[in-house]
Length: 100
Image 1 (spheres, rainbow, N blue to C red):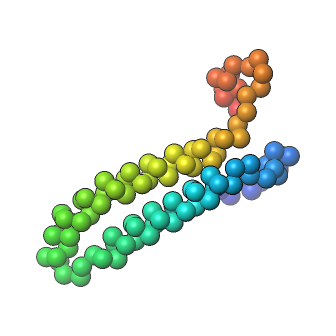
Image 2: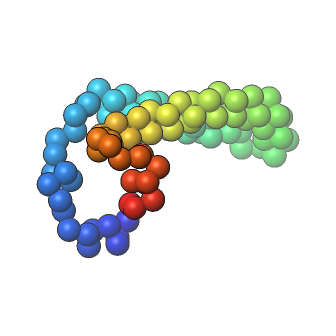
């Protein structure tokens, strides 16, 4: 993150977010994900014998739900960051990706 602070800002960097609903959906889903993740961890029992049972019964099954939620958040974040990429007319998109 620190090296990106040294890059000059361009006019495109100063533009306002076009689709704020995607941004707020990403924030909301991320907060729900972290709440669910910490909820699973905070319910962790204090006794060693109970921890093994908790891992088998709760943590293994919650990984399916948390993994699915994480994939959904990645899709939303991908939409957020890729929605403003436009194509120049007459230019092959694969060639512009190589130049950048």
